[in-house]
Length: 489
Image 1 (cartoon, rainbow, N blue to C red):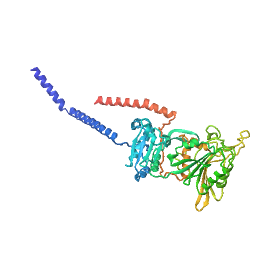
Image 2 (image 1 turned 45 degrees about the vertical axis):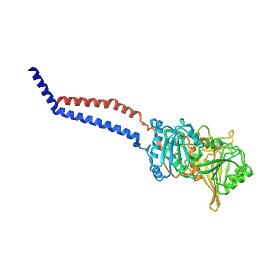
Image 3 (image 1 turned 180 degrees about the vertical axis):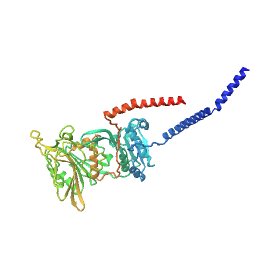
Image 4 (image 1 turned 90 degrees about the vertical axis):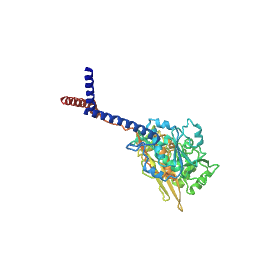
């Protein structure tokens, strides 16, 4: 009998417990929690699979780190050529990388390819497929760069150096941790080029102990739309289809026959780019040719900078900026980069009715000429701004004119592959305008960097007290208040 009563008591308690409102309420909440967790788990699996299959990333950065600009989208909307964008590494290496620049490059390429179905994306690891580079011997392919090619084997290679540049601040040689990305602009320009942009036929004159020939030819001119060949005027003539002639700081003067070939070229309304150097001796025939056609002359000595904030290692190792507003520097993506000129030859020119001149880039007002170091007095020396890059155009009549661009230092060629200098950008911006070899795409660069929180000592102390003392105390006090309120109920 006792067992039966205990059994009924247990059953009554069980019934009371099950049908109790509190139990029902708690059970319902538990069921909902379980269902919610299951839904979240299922959604997580579905989203993970979708992300692996499709690009569902949303760029929430304030500066659009991965976002394709409207200019590029507009350009690609009408792009009707098939093109392959080949990233030179394994895709997994890009996916797994924690490096912000690698992530930026990978996402920008994927998002650009997604803008047009005629673009395809491939990944080739040069270390695993060394024979791949042999297909493009003139492009000097490098790991992690980008190769863009079309059905007709027109190709351009974008190195990491060309796509990322250091950011500089102020008018002195100080760089920040921020980096300028030209990834989008360079890819769009390369696609524009392979789709049919005309190459500029360029002749590099040799045979006069020219300096910097090796570094000049080593520049990736083919990347930038220039067909570069070397010609010796003592035995060859300048080809009729030449658009541009380069004369790079010759040491030996030109012969009478060579000057005649140059004169015939200029008289046809053609263009010359001349690189000078303070180490050159007097070149009677060549300098007379330049003065006769363009009204320019060179002084003896070397341009030096008396302002120590405008030099690298010595007074004649000058850096400047593309400060002058003119059409020759407007395509530079980052005009804050310092431009290095070493051993600059002093340039003079006189205005005339038939020759137009433009000082593209110059020194500061604190530069002067050094001729004899023993007699030089920095206090009495005349200080002024000297041209470092200038353009001259001579009217030949019948809507025809010849043109000359002078770089007063051939050392600019030696800095073309240095990422924290603006030599590369200045030179190709000037050449692009001069030879009418400019991209029609105007895309602003992106700034990549880790933002820094700069606070003073007072602010740091207040934040320490706030997070270490005040907030924990507030949490403890709130807990005590809630505890005593519930006890009273």
